[in-house]
Image (cartoon, rainbow, N blue to C red; front, side, top):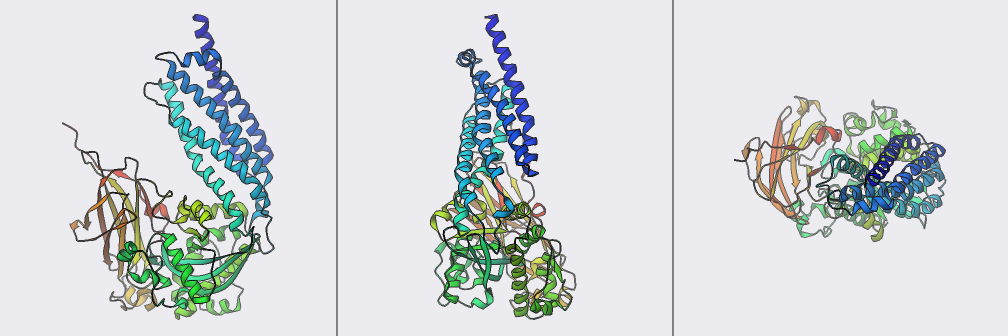
Length: 582
C-alpha cells in the first residue's frame, strides 16, 4: 500500500510539473505567432507537445487508472487524468496543425488586390483548421462535464483554469474554421462575386450604425478587388410600392423599411436590412448583387491604420476639399472629416455625398493596390466586426448559415445571439446629422427578485454635446433646420431596447418618472421603445426594466455602434444591492 501511494505521488508530481511547463510555453507560442516567426512557433509547439505527452503518459498509468475508480478520492484522480488528456489532445490535434498552417501561409499574398490572389492556400488549410477547432471544442466539452463538487482544491482550481483557457480560444478557432470554409468562394475563387458596399453614416443614427451614405459595388474575382458603380442612398429613390417587410418589424419600424434605402437599417437585424438593400439596388440599377457589406467611418479609420494615409488625388475631390478639408486622410482624421467637417465645408448635400463616395473609392483603391499591412488589416477588420461596425450578409444560403453563427452577421436572433442578450439601438428622429454631437452610455443592472425569474434594468444615458448656439453656429443640414418639427440644435432619438427571448418589458422610466412606451415582439424577443428629445447641454436617462427572464446566465449587451469608442458606451454590468435574507 505504501509503495502504491509513493508511486501515485511520483506520477502526480510528473503530471503537475509537465503541465506547468506546458503552461509556461503558451505565452511564448503566442509571441512567436504575433511576431510572424513560424519556425520558432513550430519549435515551441513541439516542446509543448513533449510536455503534454509526458503528463498524459503519467496519468494513463495503470495504477492511476485504478485509483480513479476508488471511492472518495477517485474523482480527483479521474479529473487530473482528463485535464492531462485534454491538454495533450489540444497540443497534438489543435496547436500542431494550426502552427503548420501558420507556417504555410503568406499573409501579404492573401490580401485582395488589383492583380488577384492565390486562394488555394486558404482552401488547402481549411481541413486542418476545421479539425483543430473540432479537437479543441471536444476537449473543452469534456472538461466542462466534470463535476467540481467534492474535488480537492488543488485539483479543482487547475481544472477551472484549464476550462477558462479552452473557452477563451474555442470561439476564435470555430470562427477561423468557418472563415476557411466560406472565405475562398466569397472572395471569388469559383467565379466573380459582386457585393453592395454600404457605408453607414453615424452622424445620423440608425439601429445598426447610421444612415446608409455612399453605396458602391465591390467586385471580387479570384481575390482581385475592384470598385464598380457608385451611388448614394438618395439616388436610389423611393420604392413604390414599398418592398414587403415582415409584419413584426413593420409594426415597430413602419413601412419605411421597404420604402427608402436610407431607412433599411431602422431595424437592428442586418439580414433584413441587407435583403431590402439588395432588392432596392436591383430595382434601381438592374444589377443583382451576391451580398451586402456594411462599414462605418470608424471601421474605415481602422482600415486606414493598415493602409497608411491616402492622398486626395482625385481632381473632383480636390475641388470639393478646397474649402479647407484635409488633403490627406488617415486613421486619426477620417472620422471627423466624414461625419462633421464635410458638412461645415460643403453646403450641397449632393456634393457631400460625392465627397463621401470619392473618399470611399480612394480607400478601397489603396486596399486593391495591396498597400495594406496584412496583419494590421486583419486586426482592424476583426476589431470593426467585434464592435458591430463591419457587417456581412450573403445571398448564398449555405454561406449565410455560416455567417449567421457570428456577430458580424448582425442578426438579432439565431445562433449568434447569446441566451441572455440585451440590445440597445438608436434611430435618429431629427432628420439631420446631429448624432456626431451625442454622447451615450448603456449599462445593465441585475435586480433582486426573490424568485426563479431574473430581472434586469437597462439604463441608457444620453447627452447632447452640441454647442449652446448650435441653432446658428452649425450648418442647417446638420441641425435639420426644423424640417421634421425638431427645433434646430435639439436632437430627437428613438431609443429601442431588446430583451432575451420570452422575457417581458415591464416598465420604462425617463429621468426618474414612469412613462408610457411602445411594447412589441421581434423574433420572440421583447422590444420596448421610447422617444427622447434633448437641447444642447441637456442629458436624459432612460431605464427599461425587463422581467420574467428565464435565462440563468450572465447577461450581455449589444448596442448601436456610434462615433464614440465602444468602451465608453457599454459600461460593465452592475448588480443591485439585495436585502439580506431573514
